[in-house]
Amino acid sequence: MSSTRPCPKCGTQIPSEFRFCGACGSPLDAPKEPQQAGGRTMYFGAMQVPGKARLVLIRGEGLDGVAYHLNATEHVMGRTEGAMLFAEDPLMSPRHATFFYKDNKLFVRDEGSVNGVFIRIRTPVTVDSGATFLVGEQLLQVEAVPLDLAPQPDAEGTYFYASPKRAAKLKLVQRLRGGDVGMIYRARTDAITIGREGNDVNFPEDLFLSARHCSVACAPDGRFVLTDLGSKNGTFLRIVDETPLANGDYVFVGQQLFRVEIT
Image 1 (tube, rainbow, N blue to C red):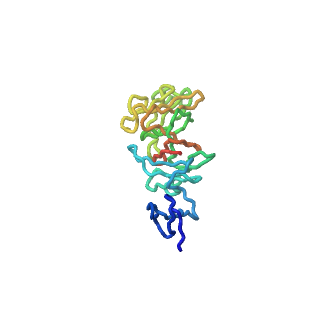
Image 2 (cartoon, rainbow, N blue to C red):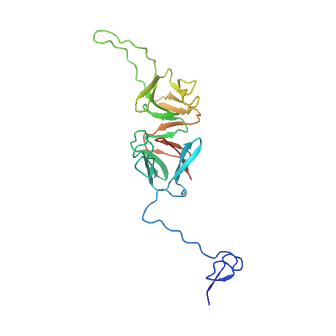
Image 3 (cartoon, rainbow, N blue to C red):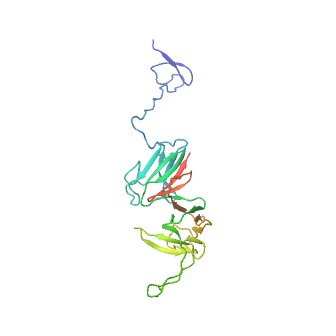
């Protein structure tokens, strides 16, 4: 006599070899145990682990691309090295950046890349002279202007003739592709506004800039304050140290823009 087992739905005793309950028709086969991955740590999982983050690649026009789940301790991004590879991105260094967890928080570190890692600022931030930021398609650098000394003549007593300098504490330097220097703007006051039109510095052909995009102002301690003026596409500051990331942050690496999502 064959053994029986109860139907998990109605409780009727059914022969063990039956696959379906003869009373209610429910399937009787137990689900198979999931296969365990062995011998190798997976950096990315199909599901986002609670408390962990993922990077969502922004493809433009508000469309999202692939999502990278950061479920391991650290994750390297680059053109030829790491788990997140972008072989076709000429602005990404071979080993560009590392995303990692420290004290249960997500951080990003620039691995000495040529073009850096940029994070969209949420509030005004204080920066040092030499800080680099990205607005629209413009890569800009803020620099302190040294105190001008009285002009001195040459050995024969002749003074060098040139346009007069503005009395300013800061200047804005445009960095061109290839490392060349473009426009240099010396501030008329203690602040500079930047945008597409109606500002101290305008880039009318840059469609990614808002009309009034951002500003740079002198701070009392000799540093500078970078402020986004409610622009559509944001103001991105190049990081210099390990930097924490929060849910909703946007990060530029090479030509790739990512949104950080943390459960």
